[in-house]
Length: 430
Image 1 (cartoon, rainbow, N blue to C red):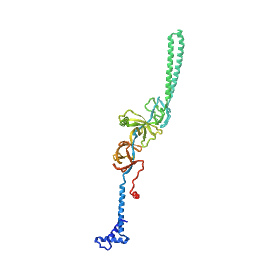
Image 2: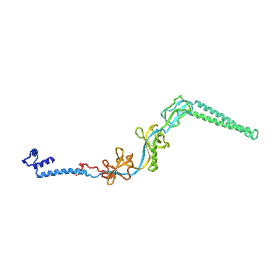
Image 3: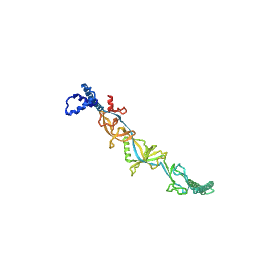
Image 4: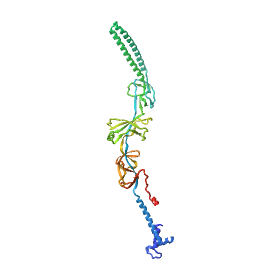
């Protein structure tokens, strides 16, 4: 029954039919008479009392529903007890790709290039012939050196024979000892001449071999700066071409001297331990390189212009994706922080200034807001370096609407969380 109907019932019992009305009540009496004609008149004192009880009961039910929502008790939250662990101290530093080997190909003898025996931009093997220089002059020099060697050997043979014949004669004093001494000296000079001509022949043969210009290393060959028919000279300034080895390849990483000094201080104080520096590369297009590398060495000199130290990392480059001169970003860990605390990311919030805070379970099961220092992430965790102690209970679930000092009902984060009941669910439960 609506509130209007109940009011009409009450009024109808208070105003007997035919009773005199005040001028201001005439309109209300007409309204009552009109409703009385449309509704049954089976209302008496008992019905009025019952209507009043229903009206009061409805009001009480609404109040109980509102009171139930207000008396829901402390919010249930899930927490994790944090502990100290090991977290790598990762860095992102700029780097530049450098070739593993670079060789400028230059001629070692003078002459005219007869043939170019490679394709520009192709991959060449060490020892492969790249250019053929006209060998005519060097063939003639080698032939002449060979003839001189033969002549020297003949002269040496004659001198040794003469000295051997003079030896018994000198012992019998048939000839003077001086003649034998001179013959022996001539034989030794002839042997020295043989050695000299033999060296000249080897030199001529080396020059003859140098007319074939080989690849000093294996790698990718560049543009040929000289064509067939060009005259080249030994030890010229301009290289015939350049060969670059791309697999493996180096990446030179620049680290500031201040960061390197801070790292060494952390290592000396025992807060961190050295790590095997596995390096990941982020390419200019934002993607990560498929292969990881290792740091080969750190330079011992600081660049006076940039104040940085160069670290060189080595990477496999089978598909020649990394090219010399390319700028990349290197991500690697030089050390491991052994006193770091890992906190799930959903537990950390930040204010407009970027300051990080978490809620912890305080005394008396109350939420306590705590400012922390969390400058980097590791997987799904924030690495907290200040603001938390081992064993503290950090709230990770149900912290969306928490306020500092609010009463809470903490349960482990792995326990099932009780969702707050709505008003409709509470009414159905009753």
